[in-house]
Amino acid sequence: MPPTYGFFHPRTATGDSSLIPAPPWRYSGDLLTIEYRTDPARVRELLPEPLEPAEEDPGAVALIWADWQSCSDSRAELLDPVRAQYKEALAVVRCGFRGRTYSRCVHIWVDKDFAMARGLHQGYPKKLGSIHQTRPHPYGPAPRIEPGARFGATLAAADRRLAQAVVTLREPSATGGFVNAHPMAHHRRLPSIEKGRGPALDELVESGAAQVEAGQAWRGDAELELFDSPTEELARLEIHEPIAAYFQQVGVVWDGGRVLERTGSAHATR
Image (cartoon, rainbow, N blue to C red; front, side):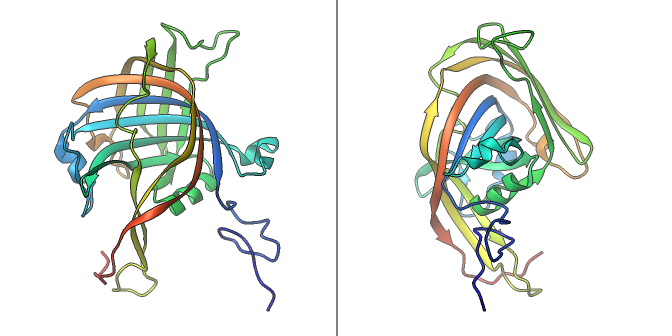
């Protein structure tokens, strides 16, 4: 039989239909980050063993909107923008593992299938959603990146709005926030095809950016609202205390991670 090719499904005789190419994956994007504090117990319930709450500020949450252009090493996707452009919104918390602090994405929505497939490989719990944010521009009515600039952001999924925000920039910042500033600790999990058996894949993995470029970060204030939904649980991370909001333009390269722990036990699935 002739071989088939492709980093991800579908695998074909040429590999051209693969939903995503092999890493490295390259990103350019605008990030709106809103940090706040919630009940630490609500963060703890999202951390499966062996992860533990962060020792400092365990209730800190970052809700991030990102407007991305992404591509493989060939950069061909940038000249076929439907394959490059997508948006996402994600909730990030911090956790501990073996004495080290990690960031962890606990909820995330994207608006393209290739972005979802990359997330499955990386361990992000991606779902489809509708994500929008104000884009800066040096001309016309769009906001400039300057004091007083205002940016809006919305997130919806399954026809229901989950979050909305308005960010007002105040001043340049030395950072773009602290919650999402660590390597990511994620689980890659695939249930067994056989009923009653444990997962076919169950890994705790670490990953992060292989390279990062970042423009000047800006700090400001945010008006943020979360909304209930029968199929989403973002609103459980209720807002107790605002911390700060940030805007930053970044360039990132992702090129794999490493396994921290594998689970070999065969627990029954729910």
